[in-house]
Length: 172
Image (tube, rainbow, N blue to C red):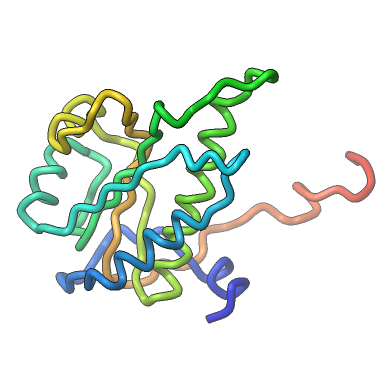
């Protein structure tokens, strides 16, 4: 699958088969996340994977956004010890943009490898941090569920390019 095909055919997957994700595949997905661009090459992120079914079930109790039974969950954190201030004061926003790039790499690499996933923003931050035994410097920002898709949903409607794309200048 080429990159453009992966981008255009990836869907948010929330329903999974019980098939586990091999460790080599998880390593590849995390490697793709770590290859994401990062402002100033700061790499202010940390990724934690949970693949044990019992731990995933326990995590589901802390994360109402996790529906279905994923084979894995990746927790995306910001490492506050690696965050340095900038003259512009936009660092907090840049760190989130960097994490968004890592998230997209996770979802696209999983799709290219025959898996599916979905970003989850509904979770109890403090409870998940305790569950993962996170040190104070790690700040959870997003969960991603992964697994073999039970089915691939149709592409949801997208806005027409003429509504969102302008050349040379904005035009009504």
